[in-house]
View 1 (cartoon, rainbow, N blue to C red):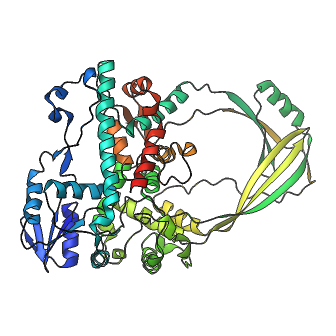
View 2 (view 1 turned 60 degrees about the vertical axis):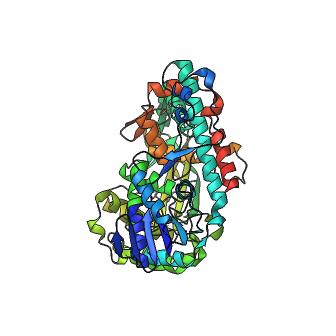
View 3 (view 1 turned 45 degrees about the vertical axis):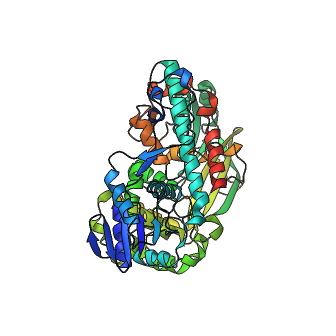
Length: 555
């Protein structure tokens, strides 16, 4: 008999129902020669420093560094019953094989292996590796179970990640707390993230705004704008000379441009857009996406890929047609989806991009809680946009000369709306303005055309300080941190992974180092002080980026 162990009760329930293990007992499901049970997240955690040695209970400079050899593990407090339930099931004489069905990623591997080792189990392990909770995906994955040993390297990388974080966290936190006589939590990923926030805060504080002026001419209802004037007197003089003077059109450039459809969502781009559109924090987005995954409506959310694999072409095509029937997308004009551009096997590592599943057909989308519904429709919108035609438009720039001063008028005219139509319809349903529109259609200016006089106005402007980070811009900065200094072949760049970035932001807020003001994330005094006292290797993204690179090589 096989014992299948999932990461959470809700996932175990889906697996049990897909595989026909329908009778529920205390702590597991049973049926068709299977037992299905579950962990509750991490059941086993690294032992704290004080348990290795009484003297480590006090934080003292002389005891550092603390380097346990070997690392020891304990049951996570409060999870003893869940662990005992799994141990009893693993020890049952009729169980001959264990199936690791924890989440298909580095952390899921760690959760299962530590529990399996702690229970002292020696029975053979098979691995279920899936990207969607649909019944068909579970059954397909189950018919293709892989040897647990194939994932040994992934487990080793997870173990290294955990030990490295423990060593940095314990030693650096104790060292700086003892040196500065107050608790200063230091983390391998959270500290460089905090440093980015503090650096931006300094730039904003030190910013001096500068005034400048622009001259504007009104020609045939279009507006042509001059270069910047830093000196107001000069701007006024130029305006006086141009008043009533002859104006010549010196050039007209037209350029046809194509904007290709956007790529599908990975977790980070989904979190960024949900923050921009709905103001959701990275953690809220991950929670909504996880819930939709468990309801079988979305594929696995913790992914860093924006493509699908070639074996998914047919499924993707079906899902696109189902999504196109949902309001508000059902009002889009003739729509012939192109699936090819979304497919790239080499760009998918553990999991493909986030897309809706075939379950849309049966689901009552209106009945979903608001956050989940918004997020689900956002993913549908991206899938439809990604499979639509390019957006084609023409830009026009006309330059004019008046008394030696140069003016430019810009315009744009849409040739084919393509994927932007779907985006516009979706945003309209949210009462949102469509994305950046720069310029209306210009009158037909021709080179050499002259005008005798035009209305001239002088307008006053100020240079703008950098903006504080929002979750959207911070996630982007975390993803790209240290990119310029990392070799191109490095697979994982940046701070953290798509799966951990939300938790890092929440940790900084909970520790009182960062606070939310509206959509902005602002470092607190304590946060800025911490970054100021720490040495560069701990605040630079390089250390953690190098580690992520090495962890990927181990895996």
